[in-house]
Length: 354
Image 1 (cartoon, one colour):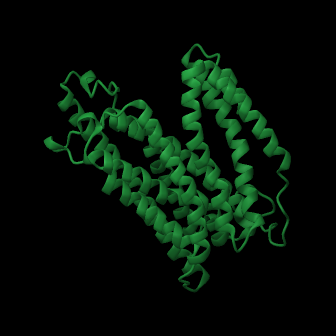
Image 2 (tube, rainbow, N blue to C red):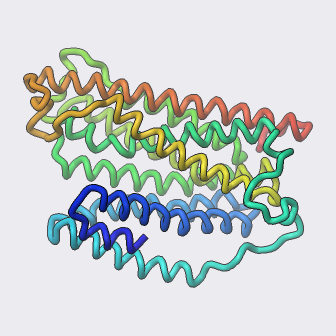
Image 3 (cartoon, rainbow, N blue to C red):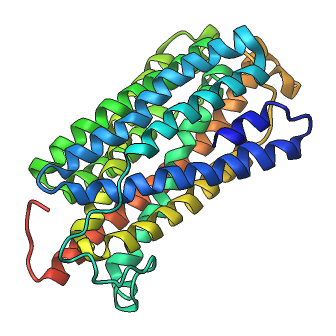
């Protein structure tokens, strides 16, 4: 990860960034992140939801802090030195974490899959596995879209300054961080699958209800003022609350549905599928949105239109992205509900707390 960041600071061509920030950093971050997600749930039982929520809240805190820190580094030192400073800081913290990570705790049931990194054939034939996979793919694809495009939406449609859009990203990360902890606590009391279902459904509803913006002639938010901005702030907060639970609760539900003996193998496949979903989600949204010139003062003039017409055109394009995102998240919610039902059927009994 650190090499990818530092080498990227010396990039002079686009393909240099593909090799460094994309390939090298991506490979390193996967090697860093996955062992933590595999090890942590095996050390907890009754408070597993809270533990995973607390651990994954770190990424929300990181997003909150780093969005502001990186903007300051860029303003003070430029892109090159900002990447080098981040790379060195990442190395120091990462080595500290790696020194305290221990091998997976052994328990009586953990050898059921022979230590294989792939689920056994009987497990892969279960409906819960396939619909859990569909849900993981769809939710990952939908989850990244607001994170990628909330900043550009604030600048291009709401006509807010870039500094304000960066603040929105920080707010979303901070809310998401707190939500992961609270959703974990809630899950320990009302059931992890129940909380996962509720969070997935409500995140999709927040996209449709709060991010979708009516394209009426009177809704143009000149200077970013008016109800559009307030509604978007409400979306940032609500989406941060509801979407925060999925990442925290997925490992815990995998362990409950498939058993501790299959957790490692199923978890590896689910995170691989979520990676594919992330690759799929944002680029398709980008194709739907198309290209346009961004900037607070431009307001769509780069499209060869007046400011008002340009903003309304972009609003319609972003609405298409919103519908696409909401459909992905709603489809993921339907899959999660079906997994909940299939799991109860396979176990021969329905429990309200699950």
